[in-house]
Image (cartoon, rainbow, N blue to C red):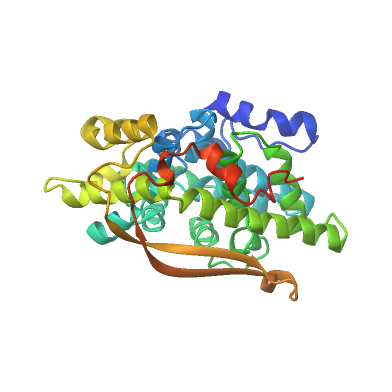
Length: 356
């Protein structure tokens, strides 16, 4: 994990001359997290779940994990805390919360979460709680060691967006540190991995939390980010291929009489590939052929459609609107799933392709 940490933050150290958190320094609470079994498991948890297996992308696998995402979110927490001159104690809690915020994601992430919530009453928020409090075996050692240096209850309230103390806005703002990295990271899928992603994260974080730009420039940056978020959901997560990958995962486990067990939720995707290989074989075929499987043609599924709009007549958080509705989707044969993602994106609105 030490090499991963160095690789992730070398850019910031050289280009931005910012303080780099000692994530790998022995004896720090950061090292306790990143070297723990629970965090190392995230190296084999895909950021976009089944979508990572169904889409062709040039983005390296190491850049598409929940571990990498969590490290980037932790960097933003450290950077903002430093710029705001927070105490070492508050900074420590914010960075630890950032490292742990996705610790409960199961293999295939959000793709199977609708099923695990119904079957076990467990989504990643509940699994976060189980691991961080040590109730799950995977988190017992981590909780025991972390509780010596951080307030576990405060960390959980930060992650759950329930805290009101100074610094809690990093997690509960509409444009928060988790969302900033998640959307910039996902947007790379739409641009073929071409983007000044590291710099984008910094500019958005500065605009959202530090007001290092004049009001108009700050507003422009955040407006573009919010429209970027709409692009990610409409062209990637809720695209036909996105729905195909996610819904296939749900259907697969719904149809198995001897399916998932609760201990499976704490495993890795390599474990699942061995145990549930037909599902992963399907992903490989989908990626290779880029066509709709016969068993899904003509099927209708419900999904939560999201629209992210900018209300130019409002300011602050009221400016950024998210509308959600449950809508049906009908899978038709030879639909856009047979089109390369890059070509599909070219046919859509490319307002944000040159983000900065």
